[in-house]
Image (cartoon, rainbow, N blue to C red; front, top):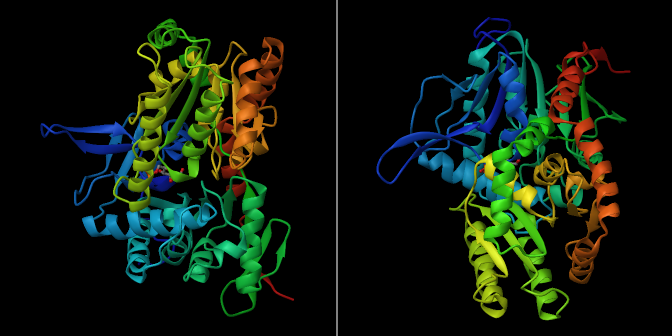
Length: 484
Ligand code: F6P
């Protein structure tokens, strides 16, 4: 740690996230490369970082490798080293087998292990130190997501001169669930080191404020939390507020308008045998996404004869994710068994019922797939936002296509004109799919226009600007005031 105010770095904006926008990969032939990393967080923050002279502190996705800071595609990258054991305990363990299932409504049971917690603390300290090293005096540091919830407090202690924001990309659970966490007070204390804590939905922000009241008894007024600061009865004001995240909608539309991508979309339809309706699911292979519920509903529609395999296909892209965590291995087996059974039961020589792909694809290919698909199925059981839903809408400049959207995705708060579903209600999902299949063109166009207005009016530039303005505009940063 260092004395306050000491200038140490040159960056006036620092983003800190577990994963960098690029992952280091070594191929089977030993060839080394940097590839785009998975997930919505990276999609959302890349445009901001390209447009600003900031630094991005994070992990390059590989164990036990040190890299000097470097420049990638206009972004200054500051890699943080994680050992094999850090990855097992901090990343696969505490982040993705404790916090992830806990924050997603305990869809899968969270595991609580004290050595995972110890590793989480140690690795958070390393990220905080790396950010403190590159941040200029008075810089703004924006910490991202559940893997780094202790960083705001650690940073404040090391560098009281900094303006510190935090954004939680995933849900924040109701207190009845959150309170299971053996380290529930430490996590909240870590977050309260920030000046501004952003959430996806207002429900997440109020769940957080209520946990603060229940665990610490601090006064909360609307979005403001008065946090005791020092021994003199002073308080520091922290704001907890929703900032629904988005995408760079214009850049997705720009891709969609390219002739080669349109040609690729046509080709995809042809390769699939020009069925009447193409349905699409795009997810990280994660138990929060409701992929099994979707396949079950689709299979029953084929079984009941409400859909015919000659007329429809479900294209499911399931990108590999967290493959060494037990719950993800079990999920892969479960989903691939379902896909195999369904194709065995219903596919013909010329038509597959499900076209399943356990890969990530480049953005261009995803845009072509969105364009080729008549119906997009987002059936998440719980999801912070779900940017795939917004991407589908952004590319549909033809005002066609139907979005079927789970009420349990954050995106449902804004995208009210989607066909809304409760993914647990399989009969309801089946009826929604049939409604989407049968929806007349005028109705499709009316809904898609409304959805596109939402996505284009609140794009990712508006999201980051409003977060950073709230953070630095004075609203969140207030001198301590004596408590009465
Ligand atoms: O958006 C949620 C999130 O967990 C990000 O924090 C993360 O980078 C992304 O999904 C992908 O997950 P992972 O980094 O574990 O592969």
